[in-house]
Length: 167
Image (cartoon, rainbow, N blue to C red; front, side, top):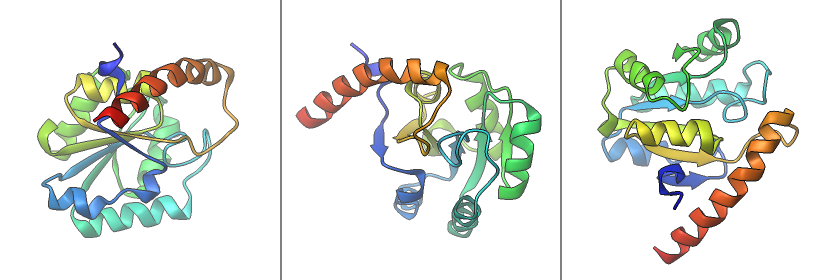
């Protein structure tokens, strides 16, 4: 029933993903959500995020941050991470994902997407035909509109986990 909202896979954190394994499988570009995926909502870039992006470059990945936020929020983060970016991406529309792939010079077949929200991040990546990885949000404290979405996400995640255990 909710299959179009299911991630391709899930992981506790963007910082725990086996990126070398994905590179070995032929992936060459990674699209990232920012808030609560790489850093806490509305917070500056962190040392772990900088180290992650340095490691991704060493592996050979191209990266692009895609966010529904405005340029003044996304650009400083992208600059600090030395990453391309798309602001006002319009997630879950696939247009922002496609723009990110165009910037990186990758295709849906060799691009990953990593994000923490089902109804924007994962749904959009799935619409764009990209391998999607759902991570748990970094912060426990969130804005009210996100809290309400998380309640609905719990229903989808319950169905996803049932389907995953049957597979």
